[in-house]
Length: 231
Image (cartoon, rainbow, N blue to C red; front, side, top):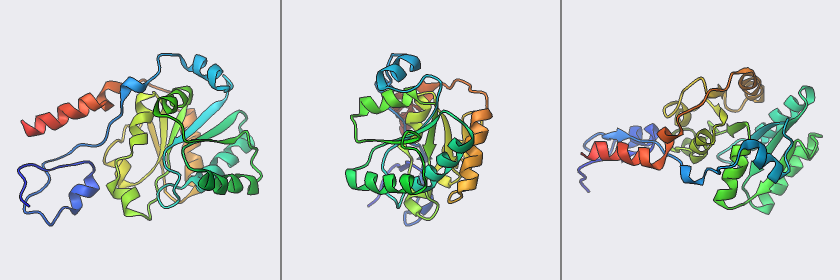
């Protein structure tokens, strides 16, 4: 069918739309619902959620399906980091009981303390944002071996992390690098390499934290970008 205008959510999708007679007019990545951001401070939220004020809190939020995200590698990297840096914790938000059990087995088989890697499971979206604002660093461990994960997706979690004022450690895949590359807020690692992920985690911890304009990643801003193409 013929269309008058075509907008893609990722560069990977745009590149593959070669069956059309015309190219994609714009690539406009995903965004986040900033109305979900809690008004409470990080300190207040940590008290509410039972988290230590002085710990370094990594967070992963989203699907824990093995084909898309390397959470086993993530657990290994955080476990190694906790071996020589005290006060490190990873919260994994999302996933059903069966998938969580598989990842818990990975944690336990590596001898990682249960307080270092914890599983929150499914929670309402507004609760997810409470955990995000309480955290320090968001993780996007996309796999490079899957085209959807590495090229086609526009990961919602990335934008939810950014609007929650988190620094980000992410896989160096086109789905990330073609959408966001501000070195002040993100450290990339070679997907599939626990050593590289660990190195990125260490670098982000040494990096000064700078504020980001969260409105840039809001749904309203995305709508304006779409309107500008339509107009």
